[in-house]
Amino acid sequence: MPANLPPQYFEAEKRFREAKTSEEKIEALETMLAIMPKHKGTDKLHAELRRKIAKFTEEAERRYATSRTSFHIRKEGAGQVALIGLPNTGKSQLLASLTEATPEIGDYPFTTQRPTVGMMKFQNIQIQMIDTPPVTGKESRVWINNIARNADLIAIIVDLSYEPVQQVEAVLQELESMGIIPETDVSDESTVGRRQRKIMIIANKSDADDSGDNVKLLSSRYDTRFPLASISAAFGIGVEELKRTIFDALEIMRAYTKTPGTKPDMTDPIILKKGSTIKKAAEDVHKDFKAKLKYAVVWGSGKFDGQRVGPEHVLKDGDIIELHI
View (cartoon, rainbow, N blue to C red):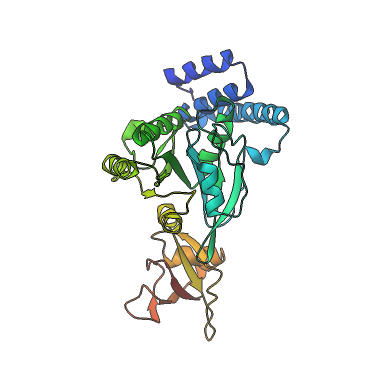
């Protein structure tokens, strides 16, 4: 079967041949991979590109004398959120405010040289937050490319003290150049070969002059596309409310299981996608439960507490379920 590669693929291939650094080569290869049609005729090419990406990633990591986890952050907790923005928007300060991580914080550009990970506590769950180097840093693109493609949510951090709309557009353009587009931008050909991701906006430095007007500008421009939160990481303003916004933007929910005659463990919920059913919850508890499940008893989303429901019953955040097989 012929590969039928589009012209954009060969443009990216040319950039790969002309690239001088490992980061530039990886960026071009990732673009080629994203553009390439997925069918049997491209299987070998797909594998070859993956091998090359692995090779150049290894070279880049050796040069930075850092571990592979700098490029590939293993997911932990209920969700993974990538903090992405231009220089000096306060990403590191925000990470320090939300988690117990201690990133280097400075009032000069490009303070963050490599990703920093922290766990944000929201009620009874933990959400993984990753502070990334500025999106415009040439040598940081390989990190951001890998992290943003795998994250459950991308949080664009902007500085409310100057032109926040232009900042959002600049970040969106950088992400698009990596083959990453918002999940809200769904239109036939625009999504072909691209990775769609949930995106929210965190407007930082709400203590700055004119921040109120700039929040209104952001809201009028993006309110229908992305969740938006206004905060001051330095002064702790709106940080607690932001945790709920992040949880909602992840579009996840918690369900608690119990066995007949016992109390549920309210400290260790199952994390499910919003809109999941009893059947999906049963599968998450144990892979064999999905096939054997007869019914469930639910407290929370039922018409009454203790209602008997079928496998297709849609759960809500905080439900308690008792599975019967």
